[in-house]
Every structure is written in structure tokens, then in C-alpha cells.
Image (cartoon, rainbow, N blue to C red):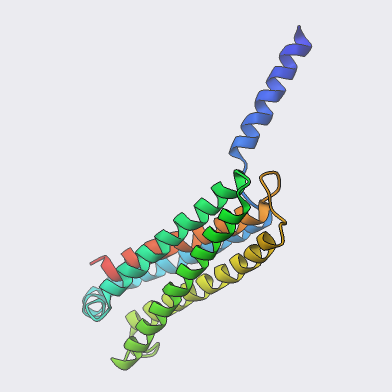
Length: 202
């Protein structure tokens, strides 16, 4: 009786462990948490600088393309939905659907980068540059840093799309898809915070 009880408890513990395990590769999650910590420090520095120079930050924020920022936010949210659908598809062993959803996420990432590059061009045309003032330094540094993270996410997804095409993922083995999805969601989350903090908050 005791052995049966012990086995049941062990099985229950294993089931709970499986349910609470992070999706994807653990090493990537360590990297994700490190990246989130870096962004948190940068956001805190921005908030403190804004508190000390609120008039400057408000006047400079008025120059930003909020509509473009909102569109980019919707684009990234849509891309996160796409990678979530890719994960659901591969867990159902629908490999082709998974690849199509990943391609959709990649395309939306490309749209984001294109729109952001156009915004950077507009910013330069109106005289925004790192050395102009404190707001410009934070705005350009934060958004370009995030821009590079979107580019990295697209590289990761490109590799996963290639592996999916080669048939390396299935319902039984799809850590790569979950890893790419987790990183993509992190990039999306950071942009939402950045958009609210830099474009919206007054």
C-alpha cells in the first residue's frame, strides 16, 4: 500500500513538473532573463531621467510618430500570435501549418523592421540624433537596441523554418519551435513596454 501511495505521489510530482517546465531550451531562457534584466535597467534609467527633465521629454515626445509606433505594436502582437499558433500546430503534429505560421511571423517581423527603419529616417530628417539631447539619446538607443533584437529573432525563426522544412520537428520533438517562440514573445513584450514608456507616457 505504501509503495502504491509513494508511486502515486511521485507520478503527481512528475506531472506537476512537466506542467510547470519552461517551454524550449533552458539555456535560451537564461539568455531571455538576462536580456529582460538589461532592458529593465535601461527602462529604469529612462524613467529617472524623464523625472528629472520632464519638460524636455514631453516636448521631444511630441515629435515622435505615435501612430507609426502603434501600428508597429499591433504588428508585433500579431507576430506573437503567429508564433503561438506555430507552437500549437507542431504540438498537433501539423508540420506544414507550423511552418506557414512561422513564415507569417517572420514576414511580420520584416514589416516591423521596415516601418521602424522608415521612422528612423524621419527622425534623422527632423534632426534627432544621439548627441542632440537626453531624450534623443534614450529614444534612439532603446529603439535601435530593440530593433537589433527583432533582427536576431528573425534569424532564429529563419533557422527554425529551415529545420521545419527538413522535417526535424514533430509533436514528439519540437524544442526548437518552442525556443524560437519564447524568444519572439520576449521581444514583443519588451516593445510593448517600450512603446508605452517612450511614446505614450506623459
